[in-house]
Amino acid sequence: MYFVCAIRSLVDGRIYVGMTNDVAKRLSEHNAGKTKSTKGYTPWQSIYTESLPLRTQARVREKYLKSGVGKEFLKVMAP
View: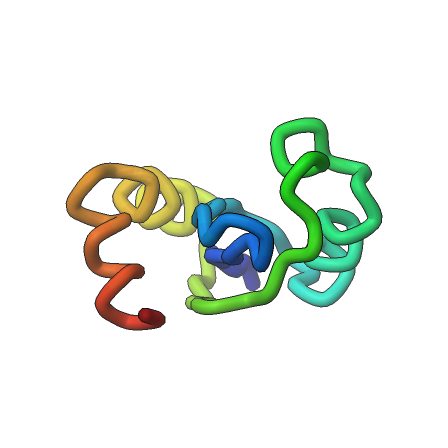
């Protein structure tokens, strides 16, 4: 099982979208500053998670949520 997750920075409200097979571990990595792209904006909180059975399906959904339309969807889902 794969998960597509969106997290929001509590510093400036930016949204980061990624894919993982362990949601809790990945969020703790972001909050610990182990991810270069999110390190400067900690702490993070989870705002959206979706599970998909195949990695390829999760990747397609991740790419959609990273698009402009996908980001607008996330802003409406978790204002």
